[in-house]
Image (cartoon, rainbow, N blue to C red; front, top):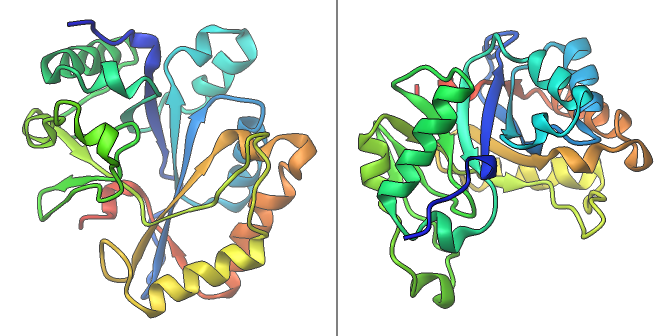
Length: 242
Protein backbone atom coordinates (compact mmCIF):
# COMPACT_ATOMS: atom_id res chain seq x y z
CA UNK A 1 0.00 0.00 0.00
CA UNK A 2 1.40 3.39 -0.96
CA UNK A 3 2.45 5.46 2.05
CA UNK A 4 1.94 9.18 2.39
CA UNK A 5 4.87 11.47 1.78
CA UNK A 6 5.98 13.27 4.93
CA UNK A 7 5.68 16.55 3.05
CA UNK A 8 1.92 16.19 3.01
CA UNK A 9 1.72 16.53 6.73
CA UNK A 10 0.93 19.72 8.52
CA UNK A 11 2.12 20.57 11.98
CA UNK A 12 0.03 22.76 14.24
CA UNK A 13 1.82 25.34 16.34
CA UNK A 14 -0.35 26.61 19.20
CA UNK A 15 0.24 30.22 20.06
CA UNK A 16 -0.73 30.12 23.72
CA UNK A 17 0.04 33.73 24.57
CA UNK A 18 -2.75 34.14 27.11
CA UNK A 19 -5.24 31.84 28.83
CA UNK A 20 -8.89 32.16 27.86
CA UNK A 21 -10.64 35.01 29.59
CA UNK A 22 -13.29 34.26 32.19
CA UNK A 23 -16.27 34.64 29.85
CA UNK A 24 -19.18 32.33 29.14
CA UNK A 25 -18.57 31.87 25.42
CA UNK A 26 -15.15 31.04 24.01
CA UNK A 27 -13.77 31.16 20.45
CA UNK A 28 -10.88 28.88 19.46
CA UNK A 29 -9.18 30.41 16.41
CA UNK A 30 -7.44 27.98 14.03
CA UNK A 31 -5.54 28.63 10.78
CA UNK A 32 -4.66 25.87 8.30
CA UNK A 33 -2.03 25.09 5.69
CA UNK A 34 0.67 27.71 6.25
CA UNK A 35 3.21 29.05 6.10
CA UNK A 36 1.88 30.89 3.03
CA UNK A 37 1.74 34.49 1.85
CA UNK A 38 -0.84 35.37 4.49
CA UNK A 39 0.94 33.83 7.49
CA UNK A 40 3.07 36.87 8.31
CA UNK A 41 -0.04 39.08 8.41
CA UNK A 42 -1.76 36.71 10.80
CA UNK A 43 1.25 36.61 13.11
CA UNK A 44 1.48 40.41 13.07
CA UNK A 45 -2.11 40.82 14.26
CA UNK A 46 -1.85 38.05 16.85
CA UNK A 47 1.34 39.49 18.30
CA UNK A 48 -0.42 42.81 18.71
CA UNK A 49 -3.67 41.42 20.14
CA UNK A 50 -2.15 38.63 22.27
CA UNK A 51 -4.93 36.14 21.65
CA UNK A 52 -4.31 32.36 21.67
CA UNK A 53 -4.59 30.62 18.30
CA UNK A 54 -3.81 27.30 16.67
CA UNK A 55 -1.82 27.40 13.42
CA UNK A 56 -1.56 24.31 11.23
CA UNK A 57 1.72 24.36 9.30
CA UNK A 58 2.22 22.24 6.16
CA UNK A 59 5.33 20.14 6.64
CA UNK A 60 6.78 20.77 3.17
CA UNK A 61 6.15 24.54 3.08
CA UNK A 62 8.96 25.64 5.44
CA UNK A 63 11.46 23.83 3.19
CA UNK A 64 10.57 25.96 0.15
CA UNK A 65 12.39 29.14 1.21
CA UNK A 66 14.05 30.87 4.15
CA UNK A 67 11.18 33.30 4.67
CA UNK A 68 8.68 30.52 5.30
CA UNK A 69 11.17 28.68 7.48
CA UNK A 70 11.58 31.86 9.55
CA UNK A 71 7.81 32.07 10.07
CA UNK A 72 7.81 28.54 11.43
CA UNK A 73 10.80 29.30 13.64
CA UNK A 74 8.79 32.02 15.37
CA UNK A 75 6.46 29.32 16.67
CA UNK A 76 8.99 26.58 17.45
CA UNK A 77 8.78 27.13 21.21
CA UNK A 78 5.01 26.56 21.21
CA UNK A 79 3.09 23.28 21.68
CA UNK A 80 2.62 21.35 18.47
CA UNK A 81 -0.19 19.53 16.71
CA UNK A 82 -0.11 17.37 13.60
CA UNK A 83 -2.38 17.72 10.58
CA UNK A 84 -2.17 16.65 6.93
CA UNK A 85 -2.84 17.96 3.45
CA UNK A 86 -4.90 16.53 0.54
CA UNK A 87 -4.60 13.20 -1.28
CA UNK A 88 -7.06 11.58 1.10
CA UNK A 89 -7.20 8.36 -0.92
CA UNK A 90 -3.60 7.53 -0.04
CA UNK A 91 -3.72 9.07 3.40
CA UNK A 92 -6.60 6.87 4.56
CA UNK A 93 -5.69 3.75 2.61
CA UNK A 94 -3.74 2.31 5.52
CA UNK A 95 -4.01 3.24 9.19
CA UNK A 96 -0.55 1.78 9.75
CA UNK A 97 0.94 4.05 7.07
CA UNK A 98 -0.98 7.00 8.49
CA UNK A 99 0.50 6.46 11.95
CA UNK A 100 3.98 5.86 10.53
CA UNK A 101 3.90 9.18 8.68
CA UNK A 102 2.54 10.96 11.73
CA UNK A 103 5.41 9.55 13.77
CA UNK A 104 8.04 10.60 11.21
CA UNK A 105 6.62 14.13 11.09
CA UNK A 106 6.40 14.35 14.88
CA UNK A 107 10.05 13.33 15.19
CA UNK A 108 11.39 15.64 12.48
CA UNK A 109 9.55 18.67 13.88
CA UNK A 110 10.16 17.90 17.53
CA UNK A 111 6.59 17.18 18.56
CA UNK A 112 6.21 15.83 22.07
CA UNK A 113 3.41 13.67 23.38
CA UNK A 114 1.21 12.08 24.30
CA UNK A 115 -1.09 13.70 23.74
CA UNK A 116 -0.49 15.44 20.43
CA UNK A 117 -3.39 17.63 19.37
CA UNK A 118 -4.33 16.76 15.80
CA UNK A 119 -6.73 17.48 12.96
CA UNK A 120 -6.93 14.94 10.15
CA UNK A 121 -7.36 16.00 6.49
CA UNK A 122 -10.87 16.40 5.14
CA UNK A 123 -12.45 14.89 8.23
CA UNK A 124 -14.40 17.00 10.72
CA UNK A 125 -14.11 14.45 13.51
CA UNK A 126 -13.45 14.63 17.23
CA UNK A 127 -11.77 11.94 19.32
CA UNK A 128 -11.22 13.43 22.77
CA UNK A 129 -11.22 11.85 26.23
CA UNK A 130 -14.81 12.93 26.88
CA UNK A 131 -16.37 12.92 23.40
CA UNK A 132 -16.39 11.16 20.04
CA UNK A 133 -18.00 12.61 16.90
CA UNK A 134 -17.83 11.43 13.29
CA UNK A 135 -17.80 13.52 10.12
CA UNK A 136 -21.35 13.36 8.80
CA UNK A 137 -20.44 15.17 5.58
CA UNK A 138 -18.47 12.27 4.08
CA UNK A 139 -20.02 11.50 0.68
CA UNK A 140 -20.65 8.13 -0.92
CA UNK A 141 -17.44 8.10 -3.02
CA UNK A 142 -15.38 8.67 0.12
CA UNK A 143 -17.49 6.21 2.08
CA UNK A 144 -16.52 3.44 -0.34
CA UNK A 145 -12.89 3.82 0.64
CA UNK A 146 -11.46 1.99 3.60
CA UNK A 147 -12.75 3.60 6.78
CA UNK A 148 -9.99 5.49 8.58
CA UNK A 149 -9.27 4.08 12.02
CA UNK A 150 -10.03 7.19 14.06
CA UNK A 151 -10.21 5.21 17.30
CA UNK A 152 -6.87 3.53 16.61
CA UNK A 153 -5.22 6.89 15.88
CA UNK A 154 -6.68 8.34 19.08
CA UNK A 155 -5.50 5.34 21.07
CA UNK A 156 -2.00 5.98 19.71
CA UNK A 157 -1.77 9.27 21.57
CA UNK A 158 -3.48 11.78 19.27
CA UNK A 159 -6.35 14.02 20.34
CA UNK A 160 -8.37 14.61 17.18
CA UNK A 161 -10.14 17.94 16.69
CA UNK A 162 -12.64 19.01 14.05
CA UNK A 163 -14.28 22.44 13.84
CA UNK A 164 -17.64 24.08 14.41
CA UNK A 165 -17.61 26.75 11.72
CA UNK A 166 -15.47 27.95 8.81
CA UNK A 167 -14.59 31.33 7.39
CA UNK A 168 -15.01 30.24 3.77
CA UNK A 169 -12.76 31.31 0.89
CA UNK A 170 -13.10 31.09 -2.91
CA UNK A 171 -10.78 29.48 -5.47
CA UNK A 172 -8.50 32.53 -5.42
CA UNK A 173 -8.18 32.44 -1.64
CA UNK A 174 -10.41 35.48 -1.07
CA UNK A 175 -12.63 35.35 2.06
CA UNK A 176 -16.31 34.89 1.18
CA UNK A 177 -18.08 36.26 4.28
CA UNK A 178 -17.53 39.81 5.43
CA UNK A 179 -16.38 39.98 9.06
CA UNK A 180 -19.74 41.26 10.28
CA UNK A 181 -21.60 38.44 8.52
CA UNK A 182 -19.18 35.83 9.89
CA UNK A 183 -19.63 37.07 13.46
CA UNK A 184 -23.41 37.05 12.97
CA UNK A 185 -23.15 33.38 11.93
CA UNK A 186 -21.10 32.69 15.06
CA UNK A 187 -23.71 34.44 17.22
CA UNK A 188 -26.43 32.20 15.77
CA UNK A 189 -24.43 29.03 16.35
CA UNK A 190 -24.05 29.91 20.02
CA UNK A 191 -27.69 30.97 20.30
CA UNK A 192 -29.03 27.71 18.91
CA UNK A 193 -26.45 25.41 20.49
CA UNK A 194 -25.10 24.05 17.19
CA UNK A 195 -21.69 23.28 18.66
CA UNK A 196 -19.63 20.21 19.52
CA UNK A 197 -19.11 21.64 23.02
CA UNK A 198 -21.51 23.98 24.84
CA UNK A 199 -20.29 27.59 24.84
CA UNK A 200 -17.12 26.76 22.86
CA UNK A 201 -16.60 27.24 19.11
CA UNK A 202 -13.65 26.18 16.96
CA UNK A 203 -13.33 28.49 13.94
CA UNK A 204 -11.50 27.13 10.89
CA UNK A 205 -9.60 29.56 8.63
CA UNK A 206 -6.78 29.24 6.09
CA UNK A 207 -3.57 31.27 5.90
CA UNK A 208 -3.94 32.06 2.19
CA UNK A 209 -7.09 34.09 2.94
CA UNK A 210 -4.95 36.78 4.58
CA UNK A 211 -2.70 37.81 1.71
CA UNK A 212 -2.03 41.53 1.25
CA UNK A 213 -4.44 41.83 -1.68
CA UNK A 214 -7.27 40.42 0.48
CA UNK A 215 -6.94 42.89 3.37
CA UNK A 216 -4.42 40.55 4.96
CA UNK A 217 -4.05 42.39 8.26
CA UNK A 218 -7.34 44.33 8.28
CA UNK A 219 -9.53 41.22 8.18
CA UNK A 220 -8.02 39.29 11.12
CA UNK A 221 -7.77 42.55 13.06
CA UNK A 222 -11.45 43.28 12.42
CA UNK A 223 -12.39 39.73 13.40
CA UNK A 224 -10.58 39.90 16.74
CA UNK A 225 -11.89 43.41 17.45
CA UNK A 226 -15.49 42.44 16.66
CA UNK A 227 -15.41 39.25 18.70
CA UNK A 228 -13.99 41.16 21.67
CA UNK A 229 -16.75 43.78 21.39
CA UNK A 230 -19.32 40.98 21.34
CA UNK A 231 -17.93 39.74 24.65
CA UNK A 232 -16.31 36.53 23.46
CA UNK A 233 -13.23 35.06 25.11
CA UNK A 234 -10.41 33.36 23.18
CA UNK A 235 -9.15 29.91 24.12
CA UNK A 236 -6.40 27.53 23.01
CA UNK A 237 -7.16 24.09 21.61
CA UNK A 238 -5.71 22.30 24.60
CA UNK A 239 -8.40 23.84 26.82
CA UNK A 240 -11.26 22.89 24.50
CA UNK A 241 -12.01 19.56 26.15
CA UNK A 242 -11.29 20.84 29.65
